[in-house]
Image (cartoon, rainbow, N blue to C red; front, side, top):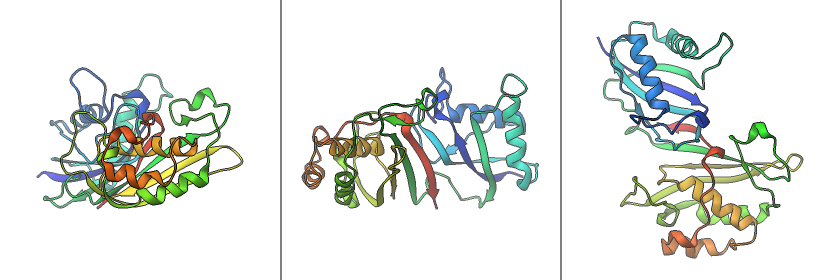
Length: 257
């Protein structure tokens, strides 16, 4: 008898060309589907909540699938992780993907369509130097940023707006561009130069978090005044917003149901 399983997944996106399966490139979805198909001995198709781009990481991606799972659900995450480890080369290798939790859901549940909101974290290293080992995990911004101005700008972005100005051109263009940002916080550590942008909302447009981040960085550098954000959002003009921050500082943190 088939069960509907919801997985909570963490992954290092620097090794993948995004979440969504592609025929000729390594993706998180494709990698996990191969592992699950091998483990469960039937074809498994994952329904992911967020189609993260190449280089984007996840602390709490969610994906559901239906299969005849005979492994006890409380043991399923550990069994999948053991199988993932076995796919790597060398006895000490660690998989770039890890299942944090597996749980059974009702037959009608769908990881993407039942989602009510998401939280993303964007990490910035605002200092003159950056460790070579962090190059795939933070956005290195060398010039000092005005945190006060960035926080002021964040106030204009928070709320329900038509966010067309924060939508990148691409294959996932949405006609309805109204979204609600419940919370947008700029958190910094004065001693290290490390900074995080935390954003929670009911949904996000293509590259929306990266464009918000790039806009806040441009505000922090004085290229855009905080008070300009109201007009930029009202205009719906992508060219008036800031640059698109790189993917490798972005983390899908939580998915809400």
